Image (cartoon, rainbow, N blue to C red):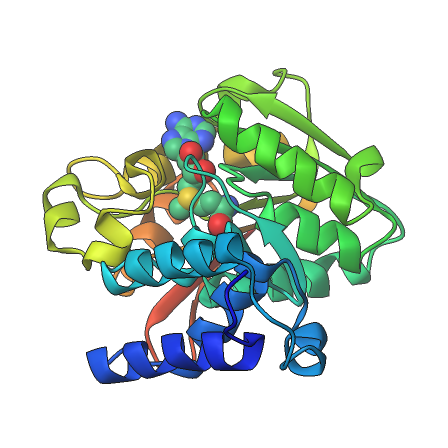
Length: 285
Ligand SMILES: C[S@@+](CC[C@H](N)C(=O)[O-])C[C@H]1O[C@@H](n2cnc3c(N)ncnc32)[C@H](O)[C@@H]1O
Protein backbone atom coordinates (compact mmCIF):
# COMPACT_ATOMS: atom_id res chain seq x y z
CA UNK A 1 0.00 0.00 0.00
CA UNK A 2 1.16 3.51 -0.73
CA UNK A 3 1.18 5.72 2.32
CA UNK A 4 -0.10 8.75 0.40
CA UNK A 5 -3.45 9.96 1.73
CA UNK A 6 -6.29 10.59 -0.73
CA UNK A 7 -6.32 14.35 -0.09
CA UNK A 8 -2.61 14.69 -0.77
CA UNK A 9 -2.76 12.47 -3.88
CA UNK A 10 -5.33 14.57 -5.73
CA UNK A 11 -3.77 17.86 -4.62
CA UNK A 12 -0.42 16.76 -6.04
CA UNK A 13 -2.15 16.19 -9.37
CA UNK A 14 -3.84 19.60 -9.08
CA UNK A 15 -0.43 21.20 -8.52
CA UNK A 16 1.02 19.44 -11.59
CA UNK A 17 -1.93 20.68 -13.68
CA UNK A 18 -1.56 24.19 -12.26
CA UNK A 19 2.16 24.28 -13.03
CA UNK A 20 1.38 23.10 -16.57
CA UNK A 21 -1.14 25.95 -17.01
CA UNK A 22 -4.37 23.96 -17.42
CA UNK A 23 -7.50 26.15 -17.16
CA UNK A 24 -9.29 24.28 -14.36
CA UNK A 25 -6.59 22.34 -12.46
CA UNK A 26 -8.56 21.73 -9.27
CA UNK A 27 -11.76 20.58 -10.94
CA UNK A 28 -9.85 18.34 -13.37
CA UNK A 29 -7.81 16.77 -10.56
CA UNK A 30 -10.88 16.14 -8.40
CA UNK A 31 -12.84 14.53 -11.24
CA UNK A 32 -9.96 12.29 -12.26
CA UNK A 33 -9.31 11.30 -8.64
CA UNK A 34 -12.98 10.47 -8.07
CA UNK A 35 -12.89 8.08 -11.03
CA UNK A 36 -9.47 6.59 -10.20
CA UNK A 37 -10.50 5.99 -6.59
CA UNK A 38 -14.10 4.98 -7.37
CA UNK A 39 -15.58 7.72 -5.17
CA UNK A 40 -18.10 10.50 -5.47
CA UNK A 41 -17.29 14.14 -4.64
CA UNK A 42 -18.40 13.75 -1.01
CA UNK A 43 -16.27 10.67 -0.39
CA UNK A 44 -13.20 12.43 -1.78
CA UNK A 45 -13.62 15.02 0.99
CA UNK A 46 -14.75 12.67 3.75
CA UNK A 47 -11.98 10.14 3.15
CA UNK A 48 -9.16 12.70 2.78
CA UNK A 49 -6.91 10.87 5.22
CA UNK A 50 -7.46 7.31 3.96
CA UNK A 51 -4.46 5.86 2.16
CA UNK A 52 -4.44 5.43 -1.62
CA UNK A 53 -3.63 1.91 -2.84
CA UNK A 54 -0.74 1.40 -5.28
CA UNK A 55 -3.28 0.49 -7.95
CA UNK A 56 -5.31 3.66 -7.40
CA UNK A 57 -2.16 5.81 -7.36
CA UNK A 58 -1.03 4.25 -10.65
CA UNK A 59 -4.42 4.79 -12.26
CA UNK A 60 -4.54 8.44 -11.17
CA UNK A 61 -1.05 8.98 -12.54
CA UNK A 62 -2.07 7.48 -15.89
CA UNK A 63 -5.15 9.73 -15.97
CA UNK A 64 -2.99 12.78 -15.14
CA UNK A 65 -0.56 11.99 -17.95
CA UNK A 66 -3.44 11.64 -20.42
CA UNK A 67 -4.83 15.00 -19.29
CA UNK A 68 -1.40 16.61 -19.65
CA UNK A 69 -1.23 15.16 -23.18
CA UNK A 70 -4.38 17.13 -24.03
CA UNK A 71 -7.16 14.58 -23.57
CA UNK A 72 -10.36 16.17 -22.17
CA UNK A 73 -11.37 15.05 -18.66
CA UNK A 74 -14.74 13.84 -19.96
CA UNK A 75 -12.99 11.45 -22.37
CA UNK A 76 -10.72 10.10 -19.65
CA UNK A 77 -13.54 9.44 -17.19
CA UNK A 78 -15.96 8.45 -19.98
CA UNK A 79 -18.74 10.69 -18.67
CA UNK A 80 -20.16 14.17 -19.26
CA UNK A 81 -22.86 16.18 -17.50
CA UNK A 82 -25.45 17.59 -19.90
CA UNK A 83 -28.80 19.19 -19.01
CA UNK A 84 -28.08 18.28 -15.39
CA UNK A 85 -27.89 14.57 -16.28
CA UNK A 86 -24.89 12.27 -16.32
CA UNK A 87 -24.12 10.77 -19.76
CA UNK A 88 -21.76 7.94 -20.65
CA UNK A 89 -19.46 8.67 -23.61
CA UNK A 90 -17.81 6.26 -26.03
CA UNK A 91 -15.15 6.47 -28.71
CA UNK A 92 -17.91 6.75 -31.34
CA UNK A 93 -19.87 9.53 -29.61
CA UNK A 94 -19.39 13.26 -29.63
CA UNK A 95 -18.67 14.73 -26.21
CA UNK A 96 -21.95 16.69 -25.77
CA UNK A 97 -21.42 20.46 -25.54
CA UNK A 98 -23.21 22.89 -23.22
CA UNK A 99 -24.38 25.00 -26.18
CA UNK A 100 -26.47 22.05 -27.38
CA UNK A 101 -28.65 22.52 -24.29
CA UNK A 102 -30.24 25.41 -26.23
CA UNK A 103 -31.68 22.83 -28.66
CA UNK A 104 -33.11 20.91 -25.70
CA UNK A 105 -34.57 24.08 -24.14
CA UNK A 106 -36.37 25.03 -27.39
CA UNK A 107 -37.66 21.48 -27.84
CA UNK A 108 -38.94 21.23 -24.26
CA UNK A 109 -40.70 24.61 -24.53
CA UNK A 110 -42.42 23.42 -27.72
CA UNK A 111 -43.46 20.01 -26.38
CA UNK A 112 -44.63 21.20 -22.97
CA UNK A 113 -47.65 22.83 -24.59
CA UNK A 114 -48.75 19.55 -26.21
CA UNK A 115 -50.82 16.78 -24.63
CA UNK A 116 -48.71 14.08 -26.30
CA UNK A 117 -46.05 14.11 -28.94
CA UNK A 118 -43.38 12.21 -30.77
CA UNK A 119 -39.91 13.40 -31.69
CA UNK A 120 -37.00 12.21 -33.77
CA UNK A 121 -33.37 12.97 -32.89
CA UNK A 122 -31.27 12.55 -36.04
CA UNK A 123 -27.62 11.73 -35.24
CA UNK A 124 -28.15 11.11 -31.54
CA UNK A 125 -24.58 10.27 -30.42
CA UNK A 126 -24.79 9.75 -26.64
CA UNK A 127 -28.52 10.42 -26.85
CA UNK A 128 -27.92 13.69 -25.03
CA UNK A 129 -30.67 15.62 -26.84
CA UNK A 130 -33.38 12.95 -26.99
CA UNK A 131 -32.80 11.59 -23.48
CA UNK A 132 -32.77 15.10 -21.95
CA UNK A 133 -36.00 16.07 -23.72
CA UNK A 134 -37.79 12.86 -22.74
CA UNK A 135 -36.66 13.17 -19.14
CA UNK A 136 -38.12 16.70 -19.04
CA UNK A 137 -41.36 15.88 -20.90
CA UNK A 138 -42.82 12.62 -19.55
CA UNK A 139 -45.69 12.53 -22.09
CA UNK A 140 -43.35 12.56 -25.08
CA UNK A 141 -41.89 9.57 -26.88
CA UNK A 142 -39.30 9.39 -29.61
CA UNK A 143 -36.87 7.80 -32.01
CA UNK A 144 -33.12 8.31 -31.94
CA UNK A 145 -30.99 7.52 -34.99
CA UNK A 146 -27.32 7.33 -35.83
CA UNK A 147 -25.00 5.84 -38.43
CA UNK A 148 -22.91 4.32 -35.67
CA UNK A 149 -24.03 1.14 -33.89
CA UNK A 150 -21.53 1.87 -31.15
CA UNK A 151 -23.03 5.33 -30.55
CA UNK A 152 -26.56 3.84 -30.49
CA UNK A 153 -25.48 1.31 -27.85
CA UNK A 154 -24.19 4.16 -25.66
CA UNK A 155 -27.37 6.18 -26.26
CA UNK A 156 -29.49 3.21 -25.23
CA UNK A 157 -27.42 2.78 -22.07
CA UNK A 158 -27.97 6.48 -21.25
CA UNK A 159 -31.71 6.18 -21.94
CA UNK A 160 -31.90 3.26 -19.50
CA UNK A 161 -29.90 5.11 -16.88
CA UNK A 162 -32.30 8.04 -17.04
CA UNK A 163 -35.48 5.96 -17.12
CA UNK A 164 -36.67 6.90 -20.62
CA UNK A 165 -35.74 3.73 -22.54
CA UNK A 166 -39.38 2.60 -22.74
CA UNK A 167 -40.22 5.82 -24.63
CA UNK A 168 -37.24 5.89 -26.99
CA UNK A 169 -36.60 3.66 -30.02
CA UNK A 170 -33.17 3.38 -31.59
CA UNK A 171 -32.58 3.02 -35.31
CA UNK A 172 -29.42 2.84 -37.35
CA UNK A 173 -29.16 4.48 -40.76
CA UNK A 174 -28.28 7.59 -42.66
CA UNK A 175 -30.66 10.43 -41.71
CA UNK A 176 -34.21 9.62 -42.93
CA UNK A 177 -33.24 6.18 -44.24
CA UNK A 178 -33.23 5.02 -40.61
CA UNK A 179 -37.01 5.29 -40.23
CA UNK A 180 -39.98 3.96 -42.27
CA UNK A 181 -41.38 6.34 -44.92
CA UNK A 182 -44.68 6.44 -43.09
CA UNK A 183 -43.29 7.57 -39.72
CA UNK A 184 -44.42 11.09 -38.78
CA UNK A 185 -43.27 13.27 -35.91
CA UNK A 186 -44.27 16.46 -34.12
CA UNK A 187 -40.68 17.50 -33.55
CA UNK A 188 -37.39 16.98 -35.36
CA UNK A 189 -34.23 17.70 -33.39
CA UNK A 190 -30.69 17.37 -34.62
CA UNK A 191 -27.17 18.51 -33.95
CA UNK A 192 -25.65 17.12 -37.13
CA UNK A 193 -21.99 17.25 -38.16
CA UNK A 194 -21.45 20.78 -39.49
CA UNK A 195 -17.72 21.34 -39.90
CA UNK A 196 -16.51 21.64 -43.49
CA UNK A 197 -14.16 18.73 -44.25
CA UNK A 198 -11.28 21.10 -45.04
CA UNK A 199 -11.68 22.96 -41.72
CA UNK A 200 -11.40 19.87 -39.49
CA UNK A 201 -7.60 20.15 -39.38
CA UNK A 202 -7.95 23.66 -37.95
CA UNK A 203 -10.00 22.55 -34.92
CA UNK A 204 -8.35 22.41 -31.49
CA UNK A 205 -6.65 19.06 -30.78
CA UNK A 206 -9.17 18.34 -27.98
CA UNK A 207 -11.89 18.23 -30.64
CA UNK A 208 -9.94 17.04 -33.70
CA UNK A 209 -8.19 14.17 -31.95
CA UNK A 210 -10.83 13.00 -29.47
CA UNK A 211 -14.23 13.56 -31.11
CA UNK A 212 -15.08 11.02 -33.85
CA UNK A 213 -14.76 12.32 -37.41
CA UNK A 214 -18.26 11.06 -38.27
CA UNK A 215 -19.63 13.44 -35.63
CA UNK A 216 -17.77 16.46 -37.04
CA UNK A 217 -17.53 16.13 -40.80
CA UNK A 218 -20.33 18.01 -42.55
CA UNK A 219 -18.94 17.46 -46.06
CA UNK A 220 -17.17 19.89 -48.39
CA UNK A 221 -19.12 22.97 -47.22
CA UNK A 222 -20.27 21.68 -43.82
CA UNK A 223 -23.92 21.66 -44.94
CA UNK A 224 -24.49 18.18 -46.35
CA UNK A 225 -26.40 16.92 -43.30
CA UNK A 226 -28.71 19.96 -43.31
CA UNK A 227 -29.56 19.38 -46.98
CA UNK A 228 -30.27 15.69 -46.33
CA UNK A 229 -32.41 16.44 -43.27
CA UNK A 230 -34.29 19.35 -44.89
CA UNK A 231 -35.06 17.33 -48.03
CA UNK A 232 -37.68 15.24 -46.20
CA UNK A 233 -38.32 17.26 -43.07
CA UNK A 234 -41.64 18.86 -44.08
CA UNK A 235 -43.19 15.59 -45.17
CA UNK A 236 -42.04 13.86 -41.96
CA UNK A 237 -43.71 16.42 -39.68
CA UNK A 238 -47.30 16.50 -38.52
CA UNK A 239 -49.05 19.85 -39.19
CA UNK A 240 -47.90 22.40 -36.61
CA UNK A 241 -44.62 20.52 -36.22
CA UNK A 242 -41.23 22.06 -35.57
CA UNK A 243 -37.61 21.33 -36.53
CA UNK A 244 -34.89 22.47 -34.12
CA UNK A 245 -31.34 22.24 -35.44
CA UNK A 246 -28.02 23.19 -33.97
CA UNK A 247 -25.84 25.10 -36.44
CA UNK A 248 -22.29 26.44 -36.67
CA UNK A 249 -21.54 30.01 -35.51
CA UNK A 250 -21.88 31.51 -39.01
CA UNK A 251 -24.39 29.15 -40.65
CA UNK A 252 -27.66 30.90 -39.70
CA UNK A 253 -28.39 32.49 -43.08
CA UNK A 254 -27.46 29.53 -45.22
CA UNK A 255 -29.14 26.85 -43.08
CA UNK A 256 -32.19 29.11 -42.73
CA UNK A 257 -32.35 29.32 -46.55
CA UNK A 258 -32.01 25.53 -46.91
CA UNK A 259 -35.03 25.00 -44.63
CA UNK A 260 -37.00 27.87 -46.18
CA UNK A 261 -36.55 26.39 -49.66
CA UNK A 262 -37.51 22.96 -48.32
CA UNK A 263 -41.02 24.31 -47.67
CA UNK A 264 -40.99 25.55 -44.08
CA UNK A 265 -43.30 28.57 -43.71
CA UNK A 266 -41.39 30.19 -40.88
CA UNK A 267 -37.66 29.97 -40.17
CA UNK A 268 -35.90 31.68 -37.29
CA UNK A 269 -32.20 31.81 -36.35
CA UNK A 270 -31.39 31.99 -32.62
CA UNK A 271 -28.09 33.18 -31.23
CA UNK A 272 -26.27 31.77 -28.21
CA UNK A 273 -25.04 33.68 -25.15
CA UNK A 274 -21.90 34.66 -27.06
CA UNK A 275 -24.07 36.30 -29.76
CA UNK A 276 -23.24 33.64 -32.37
CA UNK A 277 -25.67 31.74 -34.60
CA UNK A 278 -26.57 28.54 -32.73
CA UNK A 279 -30.05 27.19 -33.50
CA UNK A 280 -32.44 27.18 -36.45
CA UNK A 281 -36.17 26.81 -35.73
CA UNK A 282 -38.25 25.81 -38.75
CA UNK A 283 -42.03 25.62 -38.35
CA UNK A 284 -44.44 23.61 -40.47
CA UNK A 285 -47.88 25.18 -40.54
C1 LIG B 1 -22.35 16.54 -33.89
S1 LIG B 1 -22.71 14.85 -33.43
C2 LIG B 1 -24.08 15.15 -32.33
C3 LIG B 1 -24.31 14.07 -31.35
C4 LIG B 1 -25.39 14.39 -30.29
N1 LIG B 1 -26.68 14.61 -30.93
C5 LIG B 1 -25.01 15.61 -29.49
O1 LIG B 1 -25.55 16.69 -29.74
O2 LIG B 1 -24.13 15.49 -28.61
C6 LIG B 1 -23.46 14.25 -34.91
C7 LIG B 1 -23.95 12.81 -34.86
O3 LIG B 1 -24.46 12.47 -36.16
C8 LIG B 1 -24.07 11.14 -36.47
N2 LIG B 1 -24.07 11.02 -37.94
C9 LIG B 1 -23.11 11.37 -38.82
N3 LIG B 1 -23.52 11.12 -40.08
C10 LIG B 1 -24.76 10.59 -39.99
C11 LIG B 1 -25.72 10.14 -40.94
N4 LIG B 1 -25.45 10.16 -42.26
N5 LIG B 1 -26.88 9.67 -40.49
C12 LIG B 1 -27.18 9.65 -39.16
N6 LIG B 1 -26.32 10.08 -38.21
C13 LIG B 1 -25.13 10.53 -38.62
C14 LIG B 1 -22.71 10.98 -35.83
O4 LIG B 1 -22.38 9.63 -35.64
C15 LIG B 1 -22.89 11.77 -34.54
O5 LIG B 1 -23.36 10.93 -33.50
